[in-house]
Amino acid sequence: MSSEDSTTPTFRAATLDDAPDILQTLEAAFGRWPDFDLEVTPLEHLRWKMQPPDGLQPNNTVGLVGSEVIAVELRWMSLAQLGDREVVTNDGMDQAVDPRYQGRGYSRQLNDAKAAQQQSGELGIDAPSRNERILGSRQRRENPRAERQLSTWVHDFSLRGRLGTRWRNGGAADVLRHLPSTLRPPGGPVASAASSYEVESVERFDGRADRLWAAARGQFDVARIRGASYLNWRYDRRAGPSSRLAAVLGRDLVGYAVVKYSRGTASLLDVLVDPAHPDAAAPLLRQASEDARALGCRRVTAWLPSVHPLGAALSAAGYVEVNQAVPIEFDTPPGSTAQTDLDRFRDEGLRMHITMGDFDFV
Image (cartoon, rainbow, N blue to C red):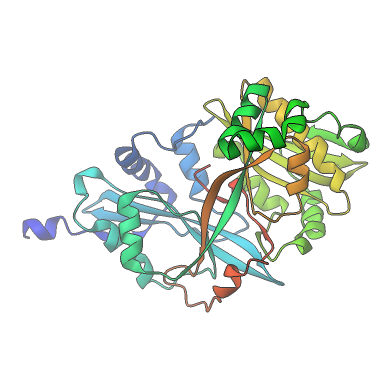
């Protein structure tokens, strides 16, 4: 066998038995993986990530030289609402080649191996990678995409932080225009309007989350289906430290919020409220901020579409929409035979519920 043949990779579906070798490849490629705090080992996090929710089949690939794992691609499979239909989404997550084998075109071969297989899934919902190697392989693949943006919202806890955010966002004019609201401590005025709702921490979501999603889903044209099964997978403790807050009226779940903490920062991964109970957003957002402040965080950051039912609630709770748009993309997964109309995702009137929690790197 020639030297060239001995380093020609083969590709196959990954299994949980491959997880230790996959982790070794990811850590060799990225150093720290994942790039946020965990309450479990990276191996436990990886095993969680490799098993999709809602009974969907895993869709992960490894590249091998001999019996050694030298390349990996993980994909996130989930269910989504697309208009009045439910579809399977198929999104790229981590992709890596061991540094010893980089520069040989193995990323392209990994992509080609996936695309050559018939892929399940009708829709991809991605945030573009900033990694130059991955960007290069994406450009060569030329997969059609529809590009959109999410808005970034920031809630600073200190007056200095709020003034600084306003200054960076719009200079002196923005500071002066919003000075009264900036000087007023956020959260106080909304308390009386929301006194009928109890906010409690939940370890796991139950069937009430399914009923909440059924009540809320009509507001959106595209969103991952946020039933109890999905929420319990996505916000499992193996995914990273977070608090799961529920707004309860009587015995009914009328809203929830999930906040994740890493390296002294807080991210509002998801928030959803029954449209029949819009005031439930206020105590959820207030409690999320109090929890983050108690842990020493200086601010909470959130992503939402620019037009969203909860935009006004974020503003009332002290969040500021800043000039930091987050690009996202919709596509047909490589290898899928689905005929997805990407033009519908370019429609500015498309009602989306897409948040930080829809992406695996947060």
